[in-house]
Each structure stands twice: as structure tokens, then as C-alpha cells.
Image 1 (cartoon, rainbow over the protein chains, first blue to last red):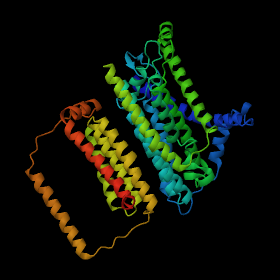
Image 2 (cartoon, each protein chain N blue to C red):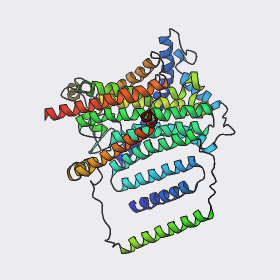
Image 3 (tube, each protein chain N blue to C red):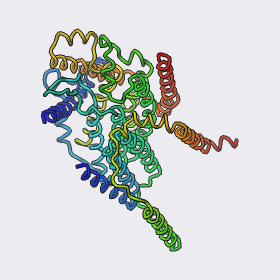
Image 4 (cartoon, one colour):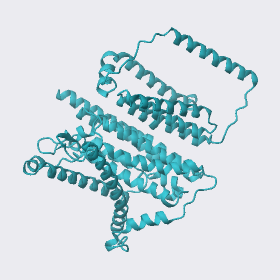
Length: 344
Length: 166
């Protein structure tokens, strides 16, 4: 019973945390953009514009909601709902800290420690595309349709390379559970991170993560210079808000996955010394904070890239995915397999 | 609890697959086929086969159905189609369907019922499956992978036919 209450508490915390970070990512994005372009950025709502996300959210709710006459009503509403739901579902398998001894049993700081965790993430991410496809099609607008067709091609092309680079990590860990993957990166001093063993795999995964979250330089589905607004051209009010918001939630989750697969998750250097000198709960909190810092860094990295690299052309995107990333990820997998055999 | 879950999932599965067949709008057909896939994946989970369930979702829902949707969007097949078939085809189709039903009934009547079979706890886990595939059934597994590869090469050759002729 206590376990159920603990898990429900964890789910609610994660839900609120995802929304909070997504809301402040929109603020951070505008501030980072302003900094990179030598501007001030939002500074009207509250000190330093800190209340800007609240004002934006309120604006989204107050706007008039328009459903185009020729649009498919049900699917038009279903689209953003699927996008948001799948974006929020992924965080269930991410481990936030080491195991705790609570209520006389070992409790993992993770909503569901299923033994196929990483496949669950791949599955849910691959479902996220339906939100964009259904919404774009239901709008009954050619620009929306083009945007959603681009999204589907892009997702399918980059999922392959992403899966192949994950296979190399699975081979070194010998487990499909993310909890296990993170705890195996502790090493003796907390620095046995996968990024040192899988540098090529990490770069491939990072590029694919940009494509999967539809971020610049791969934001072709909503490319505003060619397609007006891409798949969400016809959307207004909070339904548009859901699409934009789910992108930021996805960015948060991708950062969490990158941090836990390649950057040791909640592990940090000299964590064994810290563990000896602090209590169990305190240690778990420190671990969670370290993990959060890593995630925030990668969210910043996403924004950094957005304001640095221009958008790809569609054929360049396809060439990169199929002719460069996929062969490289297979090569990475072969090299990993060779090293595992050689070390045995 | 498990039985209730089984009946609920089976009901969803059957109803959504029937809607998939009878709906006139191809877009809705695809979406109801997706619901069918999810209920089948749920049935896998009740059998403790989590690995199969998630692979089912990744492969069918995540990849194949996206391609289906892609083609439907591209060809603009979403408007309602009314098929007009001649009477001879209708009669032939009914006869074939009834004959197939007869075959199924004949096959089922000769089958023997051995009581309830309980699935092992580890039957569908990734490690169990890997051991079986790569020890007992290694050669059939590899042969089927070559079959897939040859199908892929075949598709590429069909698409490049104009280039070969030149």
C-alpha cells in the first residue's frame, strides 16, 4: 500500500516536473535566442520576464478556438491529444536515483522498472508521430499534409540509426532495462560513462534525437519558410499550445534519455565518497539533482544548436539519415561486438 | 482479474478489427487496425510476454502502420469509396467464404482439447526468446532473415527497372 502511494507520488511529481520544465524551456529558449542574437528577450512579465510562461499559457487558453469547416472534427482534436499523451508517457521508465530502502523493502526511484525499458521508450516515441500525422491530415490543408508527410518520413529514417546506436549500448550492458544501464555506469568512482566507450554511438544518437524531436536543424515538418506552419498551420488556441508544448516535453525526455544512456544518469564523479558521508535519502536527492543538471545542460544544448545551425534541405536530411548515419551506426555496432568478443 | 482483462481485450480486438473491415473511410480503417494491434499487445502482456508485446507495437504500430498512413495520405484515398461489383463476383466471394468456414470447422472439430495450458513466467522475456532462437532454431532464423533480405533487394530492383533497361 505504501509502495503504491509512493509510486503515485512519483508519477504526480514527474508529471508536474515535465510540465514545469517544458514551460520554462519556452522561456529559456527565448532568452537563449536573445542572448545569441545580442537582444534582451522577454522582460515584461515579472522580474527578468520570469512569469512569461504563465502569461503565454493564459494567452493560449484565452484565444479563440477554430476548427476549419472542412476538417475532420474528431481527428483534428485527437491529433494534439496523442502528441501530448505520448510525450508524457515516456518518463515512466527513467531512473531518477539509486534504489532506496523504504517501508522495509527496496524501492527503485523509477515509476516502472520493466525489464524492456529502452524498448518501451522506442515504442512510445514511434507512436508520437501519429499525433502529427493525424493532426496534419485532419486539418485538410495542403501545407499541413506536406508537413505531416515529412514528419513521418523523417521519423522512420532516423529511428533506424537511433535503434542501431542503442543496440551497441545494450550489447555492452547486457540488459534492456534503463535502470540497469544507468547503475552499470557507476564504475568504481562514478565515471564509467558510456560516452567514453561509445563516442560514435553517442554522436549518432544525439543527431537522431534532434530529428526525432523535430528540432532545428531537422524541423522540416514545421518549416515556416516553406510550409507556413507545417502540420499545425490550422491549429489555434490550446490545441496549438499542446503541439508546441509536447515538443518541449519531448526535448526534456530526450535529454533525460541521452543523459541516462551515455552520461551515467544520476552517477557523478567520487559519488562513493559522497555516499559514505551522507544519509541514504540525502544521497538520493543529490543524485536526482545531478541528473537534473545533466538534463538541463542537454536542453540548453538543443537550444544552442537551434540558434547556430541552419535548417537542412529535405534531400540532405534523407541522405544524412540513410547514407551516413545508418552505415556508421552499423559499423559502431560491429566494432562494439568485436571488442566484446576480444575481451572475452 | 486476469480473465476479465482477457475478455475485455479480446472484445476490443474483435470489435475494432470488424470496424476496420467495414468502415468506408480508409483513414479510420487504419486507426482501428492500430487499436487492434494495441489490444493484441495487451494480450501478450497478460501472457507475460512483454518483449513480444513491445516489439509488436514498435514494428506494427510504430513502423508499418506509419507507412500505411503515409501511402493513404499521398494517394488521397481518404474519400469514401463505394465498390460496385458484379453479381457473379459477389456469388463467387460468398461461396469461397463459406468454403473457408467449412475448412475451419472441419479442422477445429478434429482438434482435441487438452485442458488449460499455463504459460511459463519467463516464456516471452527477451533472454528466453534469444536462447531459443539462437540455440534451437538458429538455422531457420537465419534462413528467414535471408528471405527478408532477398525481398528487400527485389523491391529495389523493381523500382530501378527503368535504369536496368537503359
